Amino acid sequence: MANEPDIAPGVDRSVPSVARIYDYMLGGNYNFPADRAVADRAMAQVPELRDIILANRGFHGRAARWIAERGISQFLDIGSGLPTAGNTHDTVRAVVPDARVAYVDNDPMVAAYGDQLLSSPQHTRVIIADVRDPDRLLGDPQLLGLLDFSRPMGLLITGVLHFVADSSDPWGLMARYVGALAPGSYVAVSHSTYDNVPPRSVQVGQEEYANASEQMHFRSRDEVHRFFTGLEIEPPYEGAGPVLAFMGEWHAEDLAAADSDGSRWGYCAVGRKP
Image (tube, rainbow, N blue to C red; front, side, top):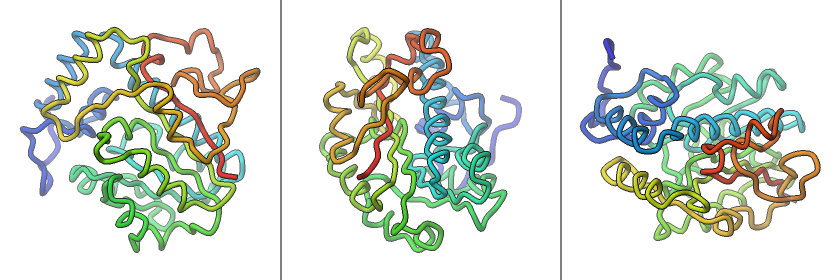
């Protein structure tokens, strides 16, 4: 890459970052050689890796738009990553022009470059916080100044919880966030799985992320389903029941085309809080 981003305060360019690896695989510019090396090694051994990333990103966008079409005008996007194409506020404002979006991430690069998301600062804010610290996040003055937790909102937490170890109780964390939402809110979650995936490919993912800013934790369908405890899962496509789907399938225009190898690396769903 000819022009690399400036090194923001708190950034160690020698340590691969989850946000920067993701940015690189989406074609972004906020990454360094260490990030690209991890991604390139992983893609060489798991050729569908870019498809996995795109399937997750596609679900995120479709879910955000679908929630906005239900009349939701405020969104909390946890683990948003770096600015890229199809940001949440662009997607939901195509439906609700004055929608409010709070982006949350713990990567210092997001703190440095997140202002590029703020084309409308009165409706969009970037908050630096960790998904594993819900009390701090949910009590953040900037968040509370933008979003009204007494009204329904959309919680987007896609491709995030597989970076939370069992020891940090990701299900308890999810329950804390869901508990803070008003009835009528929607929650979108996607999560990597080891079900029906070649064991060697799972091992590659774990090994490549071992020295990154966060480690990867693959989980089963049942374990992912637990994140929706207390929520009413919406059917992922016409003719389906209230079940989890593979990432590419959820409200896809062409289900057959969407059912790719990469899509099957992750489960997803949108649930409504009754």
